[in-house]
Length: 269
Ligand SMILES: [Zn+2]
Image (cartoon, rainbow, N blue to C red; front, side, top):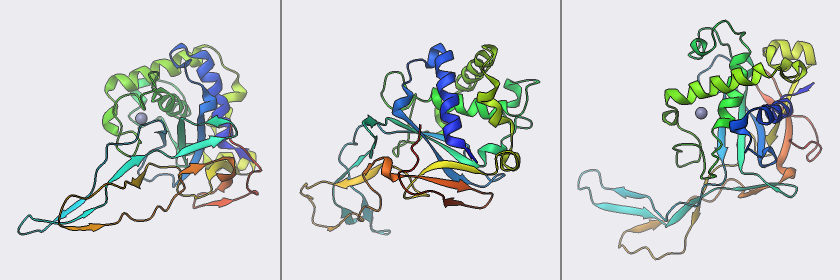
């Protein structure tokens, strides 16, 4: 079977080493993992998740009476924080998720990327996605290049036309360096083709699949200076620290992803 996230990580290594404007990226601080998403359905192909965003300013939720507008309840004070992901001695700064099998079936033709890559094969759309996510990594280490949403993921509004053009320029420059065809060949297969050729598709996932490390709220012990009822925050339903023991290899099919190996047996690149 093909370990799809491992192949992407290997290809990223080659892309970064041949692309001057991405050469600042230390891929030992980047973890690639798989999320499930059916082919042909709406949604992203991949996402860059930043783990280095600082904790938010303290805040709270509040509820108002619909008719009087009066404050009726509020939550405890909290800050929103990034979880810690540590693989061995490495602290992970960015997670890049690929949505499988949707990503594998991505086509250039009839997509908005088509005009950026005239007369180029369909699989270039997948390479474009890989470079796109790497380009989100901010050289200034302030999070994601440009604006981010509160949960640390990128918003579609963060991409101006120049973002897509710059990605396409890097993709073409990378291909012009004549990379080893063995590194990119897996992108030529759609999901059915991958299964046929490799006998299955596996990927790194997190133990709490379909969840993964996400920003969370931590209650603060601050006095609530109002007379209204204070609601406690919901208890945390996700870990705040992840290690290599939280990485599980799962096999992806058209309809689901299931655990394949014992925990800790595989480590993501
Ligand atoms: Zn993006």
